[in-house]
Image (cartoon, rainbow, N blue to C red):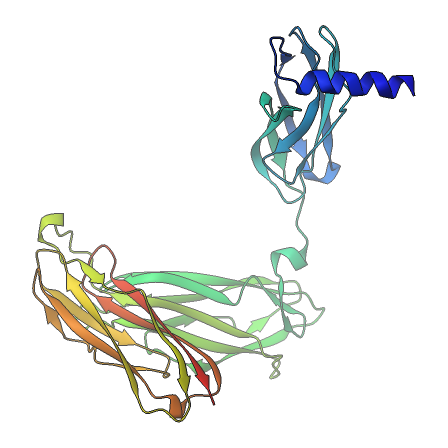
Length: 358
């Protein structure tokens, strides 16, 4: 009981505003674990701090910059000249490479009184086959991914990517890729058979023609069959076809600006006629802005069309139309994708929303 009373008095002293102040000093305030192995698990270091002020102080909290770092400390009052310890534990799981983590120490007066830093480098553990090839394609075949994204594919540009593939079974298997959606631009290289344990790449590539290039979405979907059977695994590869990078100077390029990024129809009756919302597409650049492609998902229509040309300093008034009678009840959400010859931002998205009610 006597100890509790003393502690309470010291806490009051620490919280009081006054002339005396505590000063907590850690020497050193940084610690480098060096190279540690992920497989060895957590590592810890204890920092020792001394109150070099002229009044007691209490550590209220130690805030970390990452959930991988956990501090352990005492809230016992630290008298002038006394020392305290903060033990910091770092978990290297799934954090390969160089790391640096800060811990901020706060007093009972909610003031920052110290900063501690730990660092080092984590040597990653060997990954399992399931981690390296997380997609189960059936028949013992596993893949690194089912999605390959190229972002912008400029006119005249050749891009290529790959899907990693392994046969984990004890027998040879036949592979077949059946097109579900074809762009007509995909070049595919894939083995027809995999030996037990064999690792290969399914290579995909696009060449967007320099003459009469494809503008807008370039997408292919391939269903993977193993020994003639499928478990529904589909490989998808896509990008956005845009103009070639002509190296046009900033002062002679078009710039596309939308007056709205989101168009909201709000609540609509399903028996209503077609509703319209207007927006403007402006050219704030110094060369003609040309619309190359306009794509939607089918819920709405628009007056924007490929080939529309907007002079520098001018704008085009466009509309989006939605017919509630053709929609299901509930939320309607669609993105219109507009591709232009703006060299900085050739693709813009306009989101359209509505709620269809009875």
